[in-house]
Amino acid sequence: MLDPVVCGASLLCNCDCVEGARRLLADGSVDLIVTDPPYGIGGDRLDRHYNRDESHVVEGYVEVPADAYGAFSRAWVSEAARVLRPGGALFVISGYTHLYEILGALREASLVEVNHIVWKYPFGVYTQRKFVSSHYHVLYWTKAGGNRTFNLESRYGLGERNGDGGSLNYLDREDVWTIGREYKPGRAKNRNELPHALLAKIVQYASNEGDLVCDLFLGGGSTARAAIGLNRRFVGFELSPAIFAARLPELSRLEPGELLPTLRVPVIAPVLNQGRHWTAEGEVALHDAYSRLRAQGLGKGEAVERLAAEFGRGRFGILKRLARRE
Ligand SMILES: C[S@@+](CC[C@H](N)C(=O)[O-])C[C@H]1O[C@@H](n2cnc3c(N)ncnc32)[C@H](O)[C@@H]1O
Image 1 (tube, rainbow, N blue to C red):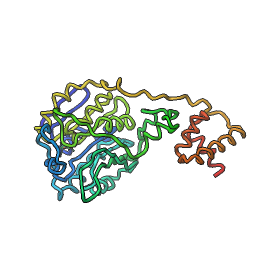
Image 2: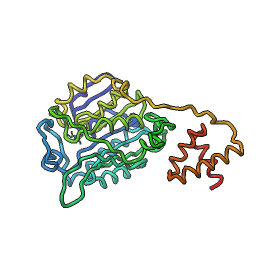
Image 3: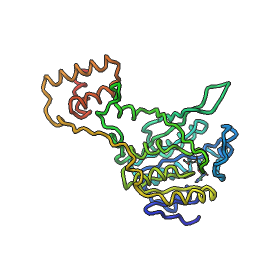
Image 4: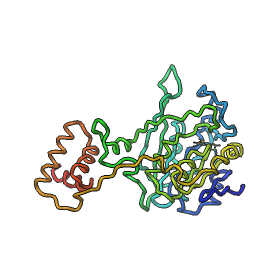
C-alpha cells in the first residue's frame, strides 16, 4: 500500500479502502462516513447504459463484479462500523440493483437505521418500455451507544417560512430530496460524480467543524471537497491509480473552510417562553391553534413546528401539552 498523501489535517489514500482503513484508522475514530460504493452494474461502462458523452470522464474506475457484491459490501461495511465512533453516522448512496446486499451488510454489522432517503434527480435514464429511473437511495445509519450529531437548524431556522407559509426547515428535512446532477461540460469528472448540494446537506446536518469525515470510495473527490470546504478533517480512499492521480492536484489545493462563506445563514429565533409555566389560557390557545393548523391540512410534525415558533416554546413542551388532550 502506498503512503497516504497528507493535505493539512486530511489524508488521501490511493489504496483499497478496507486495507487502508485497517492500517490508518483506529476503532471509533471517525465521526461521519459519506460514501458511494461502485454499483456492481458495469459502472466502468456506464456510457452504454446511459448513452451519454463520456469524453471527459477520467478512466480507471474500478467496478465490482455483480456476483461478488455481497461479500464486497460485508467487508467494507464491517470496517466502516469498526472505525465509526458510537453515535457516528454513515450515509451510503446506492442504486437499487444491489441495495438489498448493502442493507443486509448494515444489519449484520449491528448498525442502526435512522432514515431511508430517496434522492430524486431530474432527467433520469431514458426508457420507452418501463418507467424512467430517476432516483438513488441514501441510507442514513448510525452506530449505537453515543450521541448522534443532527444539527437541526444548520440550514433553516425552525421559524422560517416560504411564500405559502410552509416551514423551510420541515421541507428541507423531508426524506425525499430533489437535487439536480451537475453538468461540467469540458471538465474532468468521475463516473457518477455526486452533486455538491447533496454532500453539503449531509455534512451540515450530520457533523460539526473539526469532525473527522471519511469517504471509503473517493472517486472524483466530491465528498472531500464538501468536507474540507466546510472545515471538517477528511480521510478518503480510492483504489484506482489513474483516478487518484488525476484528481489529487485539485484536491490537495483545497483550503479548509473555503466554502463556509457560501452557506446560507439560517435565521434562528430565540425560544422566548421556554422554561416558563403554562397558564390554562395558554394551553387552550395552543390546542385551538393546533386544531386550526390540522384543519388546514398540516401534518402533526409541521403543525408542532409552527406552534413552537408561534408560542416561543420548544417542540417537546408543545408535544407534552398536546398529548394531555389526545
Ligand atoms: C461510485 S464511484 C465514487 C464517486 C464519488 N462519490 C464522486 O462523487 O466522484 C466509486 C469509486 O470507488 C472506487 N473503488 C472501487 N473499489 C474500491 C475499493 N475497494 N477501495 C477504494 N476505492 C474503490 C472506484 O474506482 C470509483 O472511483
